[in-house]
Image (cartoon, rainbow, N blue to C red; front, side):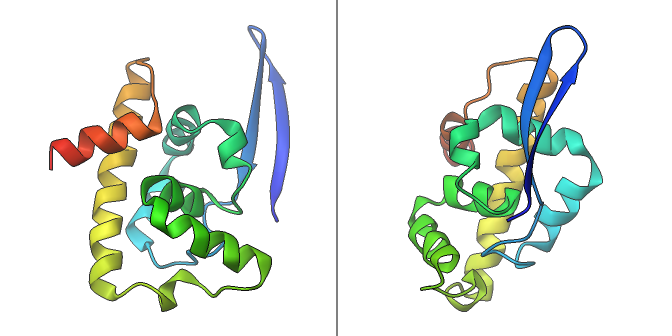
Length: 135
């Protein structure tokens, strides 16, 4: 598991969990989401602001976290993979499902980013509901 805790001092302290973008059960099945997250750490920071750290700590990658926190039916599959009793998600999701899931997650990450950039309160479940209702 590639996690590290980093602290930096500036006007107080910032404590954040650093997960790899894609090193878990979702391994490269969401390439556009992976590309977006790798394009700027600001997208990762927006996600981290919206999902409580204790929830993020459950996952091996940011994409696993986003996928499982957005589509809760995926969580058991993800955790089974971590325990060695499951398989990569690409074997449980069709291409059509993956494409639809990725498009939706991109919209939620974009909403998180916009809220974070304008210093609005960011709560992942609210963003998911907002994107669902605007769909």
